[in-house]
View 1 (cartoon, rainbow, N blue to C red):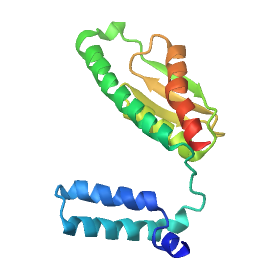
View 2 (cartoon, rainbow, N blue to C red; view 1 turned 180 degrees about the horizontal axis):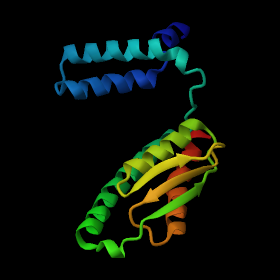
View 3 (cartoon, rainbow, N blue to C red; view 1 turned 180 degrees about the vertical axis):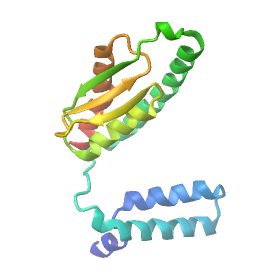
View 4 (cartoon, one colour; view 1 turned 90 degrees about the horizontal axis):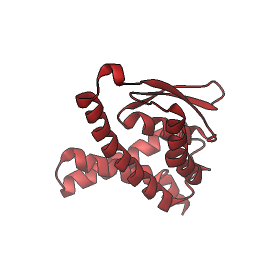
Length: 165
């Protein structure tokens, strides 16, 4: 078991790197699979010293649920942003800054939350307070900033707490 841990110090990253290489090669062949596997073994092995406190993912079904929620929200936000741009006058738009108080404490969970917010069209994470207790988000159109804050906390932060903490 220790030998396996030495060869695959981060097995999920090995799998992900192999999969990404196959997708980049755009062809499923033995050569691309072997080369992707070689990259998937070498890169985590070389970067292992920079991962001293790897996050412990607690709830795998929640990870799948989180990914599906984020994908759904990205699709719906694209439609919403298209509507705003095409049909809403600039004078009627209400861009806002929203401060989100965070219950998350692990840097990985906060990073995933900030990345999720930025990936969703119409919102961008702009700043994290020095203590990591507040996240500043800019919204393209947010007539009710409190509703945006509550939705982010309910849809994303709650799930991330179950995954990381």
